[in-house]
Amino acid sequence: MNKKVLVIDDDPELGELVKTILSPLEIVVYLAYSGEDGLKQAYNVHPDLVILDITMPGLDGFEVCSRLREFSSFPIMMLTARIHENDMLHGFNVGVDDFLRKPFSKNELEARVRALLRRSNNQNTSVSSYIGAYTDPVLEINLSSKIVKVKGNVVELSPKEYDLLACMVREQGKILSHRELVREAWGELYINDPSESSLYIYYLRNKLKDGKYGHQYIRTLWGRGYWFAPRNGDEVL
Image (cartoon, rainbow, N blue to C red; front, side, top):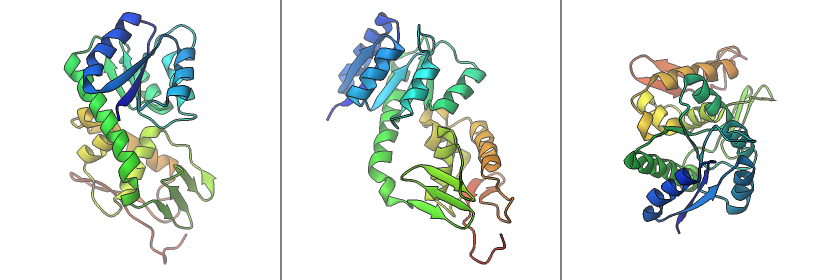
């Protein structure tokens, strides 16, 4: 079955260009020229990937992304001329999976779209082969509902923070390199930037209050990577 990609951008020429590039890849491309129309089409079409501009009249890309995340888990890629650190951090916090700068090359667009669609397909078909949850008296992680609790209180994680935590929990006990973690949360094209995973591991530890209750879940082996260490039953809370 052909994959469905929804492009939300107020520039019709860019939308047609993306459609021309992706259609030969057996991808059905839907076009929306405003944030409001994009939300309506996303709800009706149920795309496998959304490609979204930031600067649009009415709802901007960040607001559209935030609203999409209220009812969806499909990958979202920002296709924009605004690739500044603050924009990227804001984007990741509202649910963006990837960024691509305008102007872009045909090959890079194809590669990023393929990577995001592959990751989406892998998440839908193979999650059941991994650990589905982790629970102890302090920490609860449900990989099906994506709900994380510390001492019974829900912890609000950004999509990237959750992706990193879920990867470590599914592979608990295994040391995961920066490369593996960044590939899991950001995709193949970010594997040469390990600083991103270090920053989000820091955020994760703070939000999980890691170490506060007598146990450290996210461990570091310098020069190798990180791993998730389950709590032993005899540890003092």
